[in-house]
Length: 267
Image 1 (cartoon, one colour):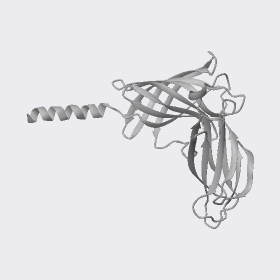
Image 2: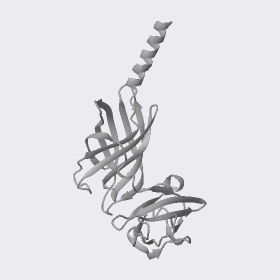
Image 3: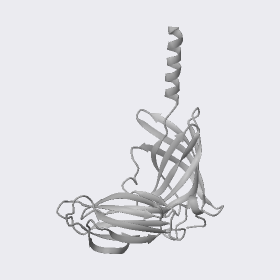
């Protein structure tokens, strides 16, 4: 009886060692001739359930110049091999002349000490065409948190967003200006218990709206904090924004094309 129990424990330990956790954030870089970015960073946000892999991929220069896509794929735990195909472009903020490359990855998980990597090859085609956008190799390392963690991203599926800004907690004289995609829509507005209201449109023609709150002063209790209540159709969202004289607060709204159509064509 004891011998059988020991064997069972050893088998379970062996399975735990072989079953690698690939969930999380992975970052790498790649070289693309004629690419829009001088530095082509890749971040994969992987969710693994059994042999299924899903998640989001970011191809970016920095958090203000990027393309976000979702992907699906498979994971073979015995070979530690992942195959992922990017599918829909969900968010983008790039120059109009840039083209989006839809990539397919074939990667293998490795661990040496504390270093975890996904390495292998990738191929791709330009969005909306069968034209190749090169291929190559890539190595991604596990990172603790996403490069995009500081900017909330909210998926919505309605045509009009109502933005109501309030002072958060104590009314202390905070005043703000607000930009949408770099265009000023509110200037030097004092935050109180009554809302400062603005509206923006989001649909297939206006899929991405970045709202930026700039602190015009810090009030009597720094930093400048605001409660933003977003009304999107029948849905309401609460976001807490904090900005200083040297750092603004941003939130990004993205049209959820999975509910009302797909983005197509070239960018």
